[in-house]
Length: 311
Image 1 (spheres, rainbow, N blue to C red):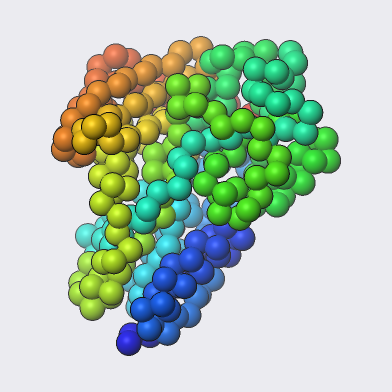
Image 2 (cartoon, rainbow, N blue to C red):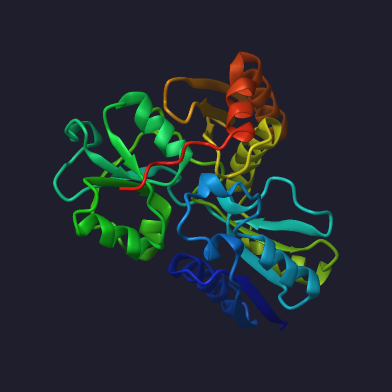
């Protein structure tokens, strides 16, 4: 069987993901190597992600290795992968999706609604910040960067009263001990592609694409295709206040999406159904733009977005 090299970031979660794919490929007889590649997003650790504003900040260097032939495939958190890939790359597989929702973690409070006025909440996501502020404008939001262990350590040291993280990463790493509540989509709409792994390869590498085909999950691909079409229509990257979640309901896709002011003063929501993922995502994106999302996003892209203040 083929000897395949996987390109991956070096974080604990990224390596779990790469090793997960490696294990599945080894079961089919492949020899696997993992090459750790440091990305722009890994190098910038002291600035809120929304302030960086670089599309592909967690994928660019990995794609360069892919283009050069140093690696055969790359494993990404799909939410980090730009919606428009260069023509020499393709999304070889979208793997079965983990729970796409966000979760509330705290030492002392069992539910998000239990937080006292002025409580300190950690997140560097504008999407999360906006939705928190929309329902609890009294809370104080502070930046939270670092790997999962670092973020949990900051919570446990008392730096925050609560933090918000993706359920999928915690589930994969078995670090759910501080999870107090899974946040419903109507309170915290997830990031586009959250919970799904995307396997990227060179578009002309037919042999590798054939070997990766078994990893593709049709339900996950359809749902995330709708979400990514929405994001493409809005012109957004993964660090803007846009949320989306598509799910199959009685055989039909239902897409829920939001665009929000970073301060939570306005949250636009749209729910629509359809059978064609790309068409559905595009339609929902256009509906949001028509209802005022364009002015929100112009302000976000055109100005230095107010990142969470330093504690």
